[in-house]
Image (cartoon, rainbow, N blue to C red; front, side, top):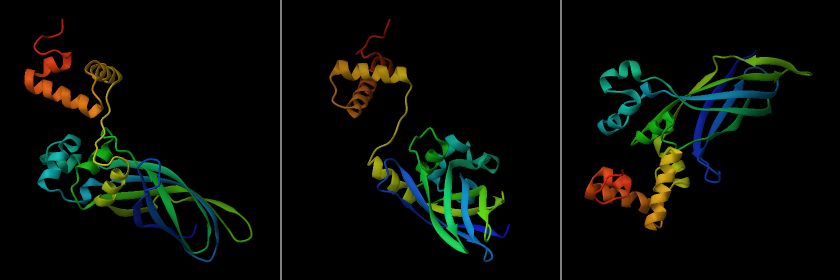
Length: 225
């Protein structure tokens, strides 16, 4: 098929989305005068951490992802960021469309942990496109989108932080196993604590005062039988 090229021209945080969401603006160009009736795309986004440098604080924050910096020559591998479908309506020559990408602030997800460790600059992304093109004048031809279609883009860290702050202002996110949550809820109820923040602060204060064993068992000096 005629050349089909993709470029990402901008990104913004969607302030009206129900959850953290980025909206990438794509420019799609199709060579020749033949109309494109529709594109059905699969869009994969990957973080390419080797494409930027890191200061000392960022390096320390990324050790759990990539290991010691002395090993980064082999461990700084791409991270999956998202995979989303996209339906592009008909056009001739060139069009622009929004790629809506739901995101997560789950710190157990590698891409989110990577972005959270950065203090500035950008997140280097590679967008990979595949799918089906419906083209042809006076009829339809169904053709695959070549697998080598891709676009590089640098997502500003400030935009990522803006997205997170819209939904979790001044907060972090922590996922815990069910039995740990049950134990925290029991401690909160037993001590009549007004919030989860107060519950965690109470446990931290107990750990500082009497040691971690006492804090976990809810005692002041005795260990659980």
